[in-house]
Image (cartoon, rainbow, N blue to C red; front, side, top):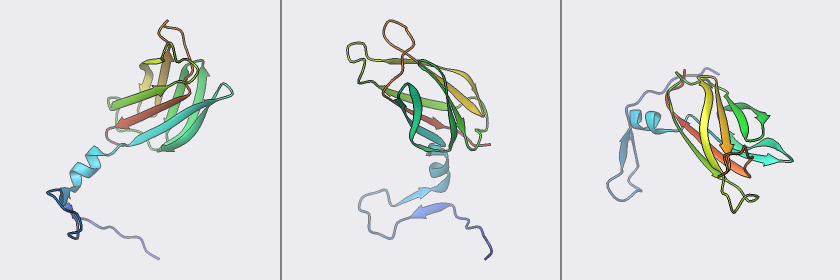
Amino acid sequence: MANGTIAFDTLSTSGQITGTAKSVDTDYVVNGSAKLWIELRTVDGGPVDGDSLNVSSLDDDATGRFTVHPSNNMGGVYNSKTMSPYSTTNTDNMIQVVGYDDQSASQFQLTSVDEGNSASDMTSLGFTVHGDLA
């Protein structure tokens, strides 16, 4: 069986969708889609990949510090990144994610601390990257 290519510039519906959003330029779809996401959980002190897209591995570097390695590298260092922490063990001092360290096209190091600025593991962390793949 041979593999082929389908090329098109616009996606359109078959008329089943009501309203004005019946077609979209494919550049919008490609550029607006997340290239990496992970729902990271801590279980018994270590990170677990709850679910993800484009993640090959996950490192537990220290308390509150994790490194995410993409399956397919990003096109560069500067990408749009979003994190959403959640903690059930630290409800009085909700965990605040303070940064992305040592980022490159092939890894993202995430750091989380509590309100006292002490390293702290979260119950769950959502992390998303938008940008170009290599």
